[in-house]
Length: 538
Ligand code: DGJ
Image (cartoon, rainbow, N blue to C red; front, side):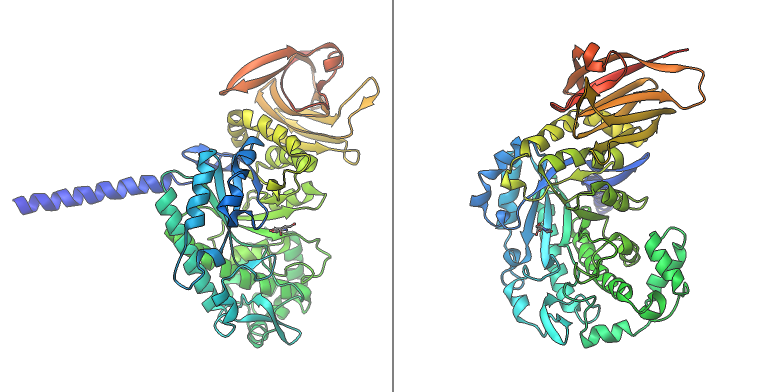
């Protein structure tokens, strides 16, 4: 009887253990589809990473970082993207050193700031400067890319040929993830991980090692051709066009299916990098299941691969990356190009949410965060070199503070598709969108002949005739969609702020401040939070 009871007890405690750990697992930072958008959920609630990425070498020294954290928190950032390099984690094979992980987490927690770690391992900006010396030295075990008959200083990503590199990289990454689980599995200071950094071959369209040449002349794997078939109607348009122009074949070599051009080389490299990075990410997730993203050195479609890292997840090859595995959650653009909106549009897809891990800070960042968060429900925004504290950090901080204040409303209305964001300039002085069945016309602010040179913000529909706006340098006119039996006017416009989620009204804006009742204005002086209520008349 006693024995029987202890069996029952241990079954019960095992059941309890599994349900507790399943709950803990559920509680990890994760991505979740909520209504119209996918949000990052941290400790059960949506989280928007108002972030910045450190210079590449800053986080290699705890002493160097120590005075920076309070300044970063004061911007205010709620998340810091923080490099973590393979060479410092595993200086000797199989011997891991987590001093930096532990120290960086302690420093971040002191300032109540969260962290996204960059796993700088086999590749950084297409090159291989971050692996430990024991990897760099052993070119037989860890082979290099061959360009123009010469092995170069870039580790190969070729399936089969580079498996030892992939496995060593994955072992180290899994050790890091296991350690983070142990020291942060409850606190959740670490929100996500970046796998590698801006991967792809530089210097030629593809690897020309004998192994790569042989693989290129072989059949395209069925896993990829099956994906093309299954996603034929939704493939990224330039990839679809390329495939169909070449006959829409579902078997053959890379050149037979994609044509004998640089595009086929890039697709071939994308497949090999993707297989490698998915494999590393999967091993890491098995140890600790955080979201993982991969970032991209962007290039326009007419640029030649090799001038930029060939094989990285450019928009035209995201489908190739997706065909190769499912361990990577987000494909993310590093947007330094002035046309921020173009790249945000290309990366925000039904199967890929928007996250901006690197971009310009200063005035550009202060503006573009509204486009990213308002128009694309981005889960995070992160200017690079944030610890430079360059001129303009205050502009970014002003935008971040205002967005932070409206977060609860933003998160709720995002799920219903009730949010729009925009950046305006002399080149793009208007934006127009539909909300609540009305047309919302946004334009650069003007009053008595004074014209704003730039404007940015977001508008949220909080009720049929109630709107919340944030930003500066623009004005808003809301009209019924024609034909209509009524007209719309502004019943009230109030500026204010939120304290602990509660609206604290400030001035009632009227007269010049709403152009005598004609426009909902956000003057160019500073970022404001304002509420507008409409009335109907005939
Ligand atoms: C993009 C890289 O991902 C960063 O690490 C850094 O090198 C920047 N370029 C420099 O602009």
